[in-house]
Length: 477
Image (cartoon, rainbow, N blue to C red):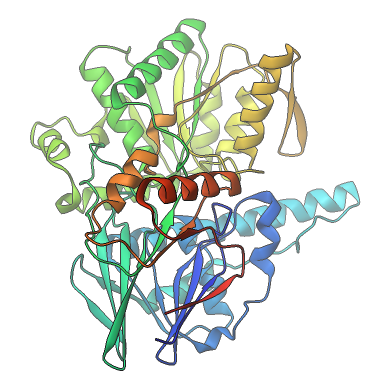
């Protein structure tokens, strides 16, 4: 077999997922993600290692920015092929890419003005990586696929999308390559979801693959239980309400924001928390929530029951869906306790920065993290500084919107909200394979985590496992 696989992202780091598969004279890119860790952001500006016009197909696992966010740049630089994904991914990706382009345009303009005022230049070009027009150029190239329905993407190569339960429309993808009467199946996990979570169906188990690329975001730990998540959310709300502050929740617009609403709805129905003005302050999250409402076929039984009993979390009492910037600004004028759910989830841009700016120095407030914070992001910096403050007893400062602010708000984190499988759940997903794969590549995890999970797989299953490095190229037999 003559198959080549290049690891162009999410290799000993978490963002920038890009995997180049070359077989039968065809180049296929699986995922086309944006780098979000500060230490790796320069890679967003790097030249692609092969001529982009030579790529025939993109297979997209899901619509998170670290998996789809470089598509406009790819198209801008010459890609004219087909982007295959599920229909829900197609709809959400359009929202995500337009939002990302708009934020990049705003951030570039803001930084240009600030750097001019400060008489300096930043490490990256003071221009957007791509524009809203560039994002729109991607849309005609999307071609939706159905779960479990193989599609021939090139001669002798077919792809099949399998529900993976991570976010609405998310998929693991099997690519089957046929050459000279032989075939090989490569399984790309995308981001593996979880069992018994709100809203979405459980991940599908996949029975056969010769090679597996498996994510490892949380491959070195076990998540908190669903009941523990509710308990900690309840505690954060009640304590902050008692103190008279606001609850600021940096949240991913896709799945996480909707899941928070689900849990908050449950707590209200159970009488565990008081009535609370809640603002979903993210135009993207508002738009994505509408996509959720249009795809009830992807819901689990529990969510369908909520819909039929008129207790949908998307119609939560006291919930305001905020679209306009002016509406967002008025939240600061409200007295008493409010909950603000805003993007971005890692605090790298968007309205959350402004809410942090206005609340992080107020000791009566709580900043509640409910998702993974990649190394180098503002969210990770805040968590690390909060840990340092606890260890040393000394107040810490954090730089937000160009100003150093004292961190006096309570900083809390709930790990169980994650849409990523933990170590046991990754084991459960991989256990669907009826025969040991020829080799497993552990991807999409920080270096130590990826190696820890690779060691775990070798010890537990006796499999051949490696942790590829950035730009590593391997030949698949």
